[in-house]
Length: 229
Image (cartoon, rainbow, N blue to C red; front, side, top):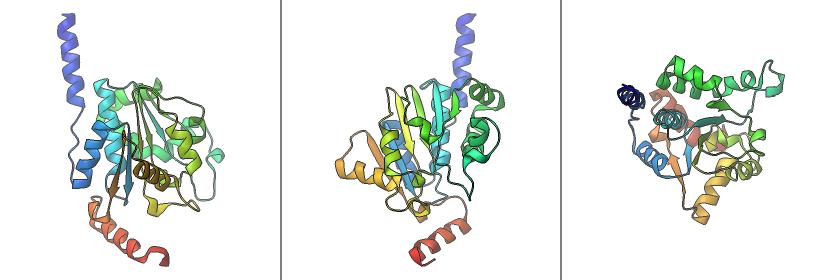
């Protein structure tokens, strides 16, 4: 009876791990990198599915039991207010910034499983400044909007990767608010110039946009205008 229940549980768990279907060649390369590399850097145009795919991939790895935890982080660049001005716990303060990723987890895991994992810390949100003193093992660390990190923050983050930890460092360099070289451009340069073996950068272009036709149009327009906006 116990063996039958365990088998049924495993079957149900595998069914939850819904396959991610690539819609573009860049997404195919991204999914392949996620299966094979410790550090993956999806960089480029908005609306190309970068954040959705990394959250879906992390949810599937959780369901399969390949990792114990998922950690979500992103730079908290706001319109004139710092994250410290919002009331509540650290999760209350940070949750609005990672809500799109949390919604992907909720949809793929189901309400009960998702809420249980959040409650027990299996899905957690960390401010970037807290990462500097931590070591990440048996987990996936997802950093979104990474174009607003600094090279110094990148150094702190990539040196936190422990055993069975995968880091996905995602962002659109064209939307950076950092003066000088931003973190995602810095990390891309380091990986490509120095040939880091267990890391891969996936460059997304405007033609990879799947969000909507109008998003694609605006990204292409802004791309042409460059600094003349």
